[in-house]
Length: 437
Ligand code: BGC
Image (cartoon, rainbow, N blue to C red; front, side, top):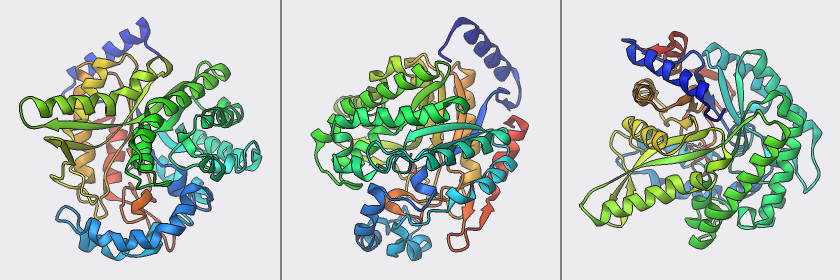
């Protein structure tokens, strides 16, 4: 858990071993994982997203041609799915709710020893104060099923989607939601805590606040910078701290953190632009983590892209793009790990990173290159405990729907057939060997 001297001694012994080996070896205890989240895979849900999808699917389909027909997106490949309103309805998901046993067989076959997934608040508490024991029992079975296969469950308590009653009271714009979140967390942890060591309270607070309350691309489509800042800078950190305290009160040994999306900011120019980049870097990357510094046992890092700042304007770097048009920059992982290792004392876990790659052209390369960068940071002293790829399975990518294919495993949504992608086999070989050449 939080660093103590024995733990540091162990860490430096591991570091020495890693640096001395001609191969890129990872510690035996390393967490090798893949992730999903409930709304993106389960199917059969009713929450703020399902209501929003019904109303906005046609608009999103009409807008797709304009939004994605760019040189950085292989539009001709995704077009047939992206222009169909059905693509934007989560619906049956990929039926992970019913097929999890089979999906865990695949995870086991791929040698994964960790699975990060989320509990769906709208299932557990469909109405304020009414807790659904059948839903809780479902998650207990999932956790036991992972444990039987020797896979460590890493459980996210809230990953973007909200129960309708929470959305009606204005979600995390309303400080009242903090205590409601606390009550939900208590129930879940009382029920499942015995079998869970790793908890993630909140997924990507900055992404949620920006997309939902600032640029308004996600429900409830608020466009108010102050609301977004209020949620990000005050309400969500307080919600995390509340959840942290509840979990530690019930299970003091549990390891609790959040997943924080980290952006690799770069800038051109001499004075003003780098200063602005530093400000964004501080507020976007570190502000939240600094607020909860004393209330986390590990730091979860999600890394997807690099921002280039030019003057006051920033853009996602699109060099060597994934299907989403996000440039693939493995060295960003090294830069962020080093910066975080320097700033915080807690161990780091890469709780998400990955790419949409329907043709599976770049995934194996990217996995290896990112891992080389993780290894490099580790040999230079950064304590990284695990590496969790997004995602185990193709899934519902929020306002983009089903066309982006992030999965190690391809899913045919008509038959629900699962097919392991070649890159996943490469990942499995690395895990089995404990590293790469
Ligand atoms: C989120 C996931 C999402 C992934 C790819 C992260 O922002 O936690 O829900 O699917 O990135 O965009």
